[in-house]
Structure formats: C-alpha cells, structure tokens
Length: 119
Image (cartoon, rainbow, N blue to C red; front, side):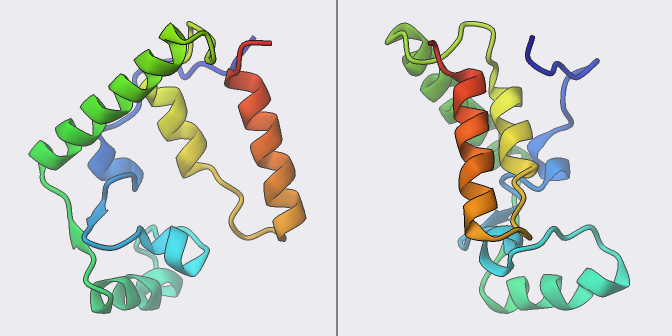
C-alpha cells in the first residue's frame, strides 16, 4: 500500500516545490535542501544570485493544475496507478535523495516509479 499522508500536503510555496521561479530550485541546482537555517543561508543567497524568486499563490495554483493534468493523462493512459495524486508526486519530488551518489539516486527513482506505475 502506498504511503498516504494523514492530511493534504501544504501549499507548494511551503514545500519547496515551485518556491523558486525563473531558475531551478536551489535543491536541484546545489544538491541540498534549503530550510532557512544558518548552514543553508549561503545556498539561499546563491539561489537568489541565480535569479530565483519566490512564487506567487497564482503560480502555485498553475503548477498544481499542470501537475493534476499530467497525473490525469498518465492515469487515463493506464501508465499510473489510479490512487496516485499530485500531492504524492510533490512528496516524491521534495524527498529526492540529492545528497547521495548517482547510483543511489537512480535506484531511488526506480523504486518510486515502480510504486506509482501500473504493473
């Protein structure tokens, strides 16, 4: 049975997904999560210098709508399990083990895809 959070995930702007528009998220660019603590301040500053800006609620809504369409299309094609939601995809995206070597990241991705795919 797939992991299901007890409640809906927070808005995109608080999960880090869609948090930075105009450039990739700092996590993707720099390989670690930003959470505002002092060790990550340099990462946030670097992201800002790359042109990253906070998203607006409208941008968050558009991102969720686009993700919903992608999930719906994959489910309609029979490629994705029916119980998978956009929030599941956000959870996967925000929990990527970016700090691990490529081989471990590739294995993590294989496991995630197997978990959301129709067998």
